[in-house]
Amino acid sequence: MNFAGLLKAFDTIVVLREAARRFRAPSTPEPTNETALAGTTTPTALTGQIEARLTGVVVAALKEAFDRDHARLELERAQLEEQRRRAEDALRAELRRQAADREVARLRLIAGTALGGWIAAVATMVVRLDTASAISRGVSAFAWLLLLAALGTAFMAQGHVSASVPGTSAPVEAGRQGSVALWLLIAGLACAAIALLF
Image 1 (cartoon, helix red, strand yellow):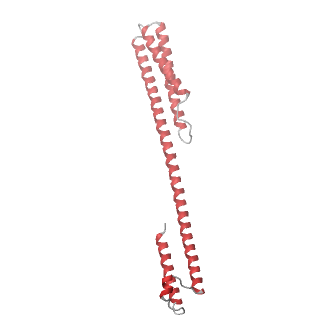
Image 2 (cartoon, rainbow, N blue to C red):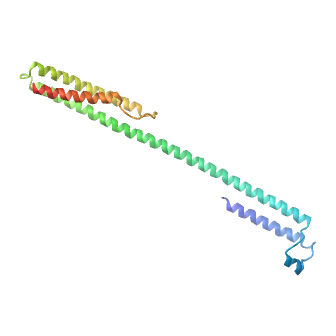
């Protein structure tokens, strides 16, 4: 609240009231002890008008001060609400970014494992090329295809996750491509292990 303005208005009222008393003092007789003890004085018409005007001025000043304070409080409340909304939007965006980072890291792990498995399967087949049977070669070739498909699917899923982060409110996930990449990786590693048995 604007207490300084209220105090100035009150001081002005007191000064004007004192001036009104001085103005009326010469024209009215001094109150006697009986009227002073009774606490009753008869105001003149002029002082009644002055007091009525002063009361109106005080009421108007107080109303204006309260209206100004109310408007200021409403503005501050609106600013705080806007700041809270921005903070919530920033928090949601940060949580989406972190979820996308975790999903991309998982897909990179799948892609790295698929690439490492493919290299290991190729190296194993090259070492065993003379002793490997036709079934082992066929299963090993199928494992290579599965591991390369897992690698490609993981890369496509990473692109899908990266594209879904900005501007949407849907949950961040790789979708079907992420699951397919994982199952292709598992199947490819299983086939590479089976190829070693023959």
